[in-house]
Image (cartoon, rainbow, N blue to C red; front, side, top):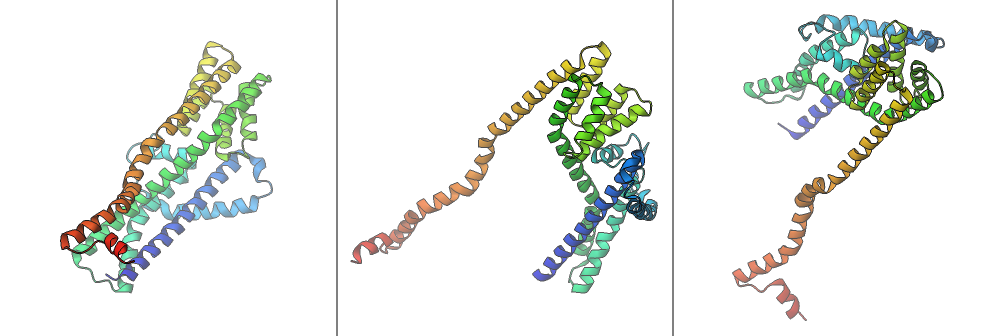
Length: 323
């Protein structure tokens, strides 16, 4: 197989994966924005036409991919499935997110092998039947697993954003409660203030407020927040607020204690990561730097030994006798 054909195949696969990723990102963003705009009507007063066109495009793609979703749909109830929780953790809570995800999962399973067959016919690759079958199976497996990798990346990126901005939101919440605001009003105010800094955290707090306005209890709304986010810091905050509400203790004192514990835990984790640096740098030091040092130190001695075994004068001797 020529090297140029392999490079062209790799570039074509990377370009197609990038285009599919851009399509998935734009589709999910429009769906999530549309759902939030339906809940909060004042946000789309100036952009009704734009959201209407995005909604039509999302409905068109969802309608085309929904028939393919049943081939990859998990068994059992959708609300309690791990995939539904993963999509919620990534920020995709609309009804069409699962159908689009499963549809792309089934579609890519067949798209990548077909792409390989087309490219192999264009570049006239000479492969036997076993190699062709193996590559087709690898392309199918890659296409089937690619949405999982993308979803895991989106979940980890969103959780990292929530983890980095949560201490600031907790401090704002504590200040609002100490200033005399109720906890529900403080959550709503912090959600509005954090929208510029972190849209994901603002959306989570807004969902808590909307659930309470819809009639859910505060404990249930907070537990749903912990389930959606999946961060230990948020879980501990929810447990603290639920216990404070249950036993009638001061919420401001609970938030202050939890904030101090949270910052102490973050400082300890930072110190732990710093303490791991010498151990992590040991392997690159042994594999990359020490061999070069050994080559520089031992290469002259090895050259002199080789010359001595052959009965030839060493390079050092030639340098000394040359004057």
